[in-house]
Amino acid sequence: MPLKPAIDPEQWILSNPNDLISLTKWQRTVNLLAKLFDAPAGFLVQHTPSGYQITIASEQNTNPYSAGMVVEPQANIFCRKIVETRKSLYVANAMIDPCWDSNPEVHGDGFRSYLGVPVFWPNGKAFGTFCVMDYRETNYDDTYFELIEQLKDILEADLSLLELYTHMQKLAVTDPLTELNNRRGFCSLAQQRIRLAKRMGSRLGVFYLDVDKFKQINDNYGHAVGDEVLIDVAKAMHKCVRSSDVIGRMGGDEFVALVLIEHDSDFDAIAQRFTDQFAQYSEQDLPLYTVAIGYIDVDLNMEVEGILALADQDMYQHKVE
Image 1 (tube, rainbow, N blue to C red):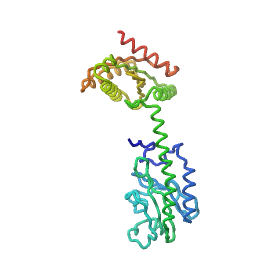
Image 2: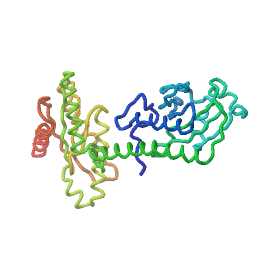
Image 3: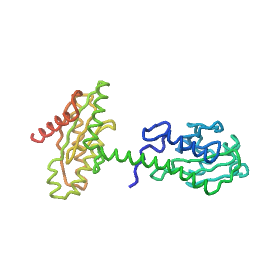
Image 4: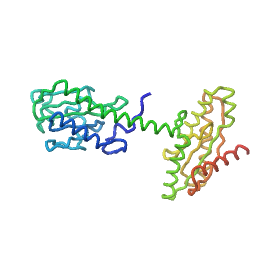
């Protein structure tokens, strides 16, 4: 399964900095590209639906463009051709090629020559281009083509490492079956949410849920069916809470939700919403099941593990009753 992008490919990297990306390293790579080609300008350009943005520009007095500049998506520029074809592009002299008559880089800024290669995200989506431009006509041989490909590989390797690192981080805090936060992930996010609630003077509640007689479901119908029940519980929980609330699977058949509370009546209302939603899901091609629910008003001065222990106790009290 391809990894999901660690950075939204539709957002500019320069507007959404990430500590895992070394723009300084990329700057050195682009500077080296321009130096080795004896070219007045080199670039790493990112493409999004908003257009083409220069992420890195070679640091030269001869370079008229700077990092952060954006060109509209429909402009007739060299980078657009590469992104659309997903292929390298070499133009030795654009002045004698009529297809570049409306290219502002040529007839506005005086560039004649262009050599660029596509740069891809690890999932195969086009990131943008890596290129050199010259005011003179050029005659690059295969050595230059190999060189720019080798330097491009450095950039793509960085993007791959970024995706892998972020994916591994997610695996460490995500339950693979339900894709909810695991205990570690929930506790980390809950602690942040509690700190925010203290600053904002908000009130929080924790709901602790346990699938009744889950062992019997596994024994009678098999673990595959038991897994489907757990997945259904996770889906139902998503429908019952806000996107800003925090939910997770604690392990086995136990789930938890940290939610914003505005009124005392919210506790019973949310618990009933959970119950109604589970009832709908349990009627769909799976054995009927019920869920025990306990909840507490969060003491914002307590640690998360202590809060979970109290909510767990309340849930088991409901089971006994």
